[in-house]
Image (cartoon, rainbow, N blue to C red; front, side):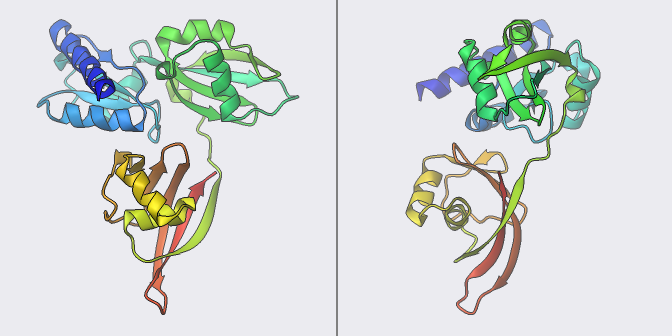
Length: 261
């Protein structure tokens, strides 16, 4: 795909800049599929210091950050710690938006307001919505423009201020436990039960690359899912296989799906 080729060419360009000029470089934000492609590409480069970073551990949208050799950071944990401790060099910041008390806003409302300002999705990471507003993770390059212009979402008035990434407000996502019965722990079976789609639709989604298991794409319908695995169905949501129970008299498995609402 031409789009994939362009993505990887951009990644290669950032690697080249990092190595040639001994400077920290980074990509734009990557979605789950783009992130998987970039990870696979970077794994082929021996000795490359790269981490995929979205401001917090479970971020869905991440940037690829390339570190020059002189920083000598041996593990991904070291890279993430360095970014947290060096705010001036961190390519990300957080715009903490507070709304007026008269309106209720959703993730879609905030994202719509951002897109309405002409901001490309690749410039913005995860949006963590709270009762009083939203923490927006974004590249510093667009931060001043957004702070000055993101003053309204729907009918709600907004006020924004920057906070360090390490002060990001982690929002506890609402979750629902759903007991299900499946024939086996095949990926297509679990996707069908978790997202209330037919087995054929689940299999088609897997084959089209729409299903991610623990942030990695999985296109094998017969792949086995294990307890604790996190599954994302692009455009439909995410779940976790919370529990694998016993077998029914008919030989079917009892499982519990944790659905993120």
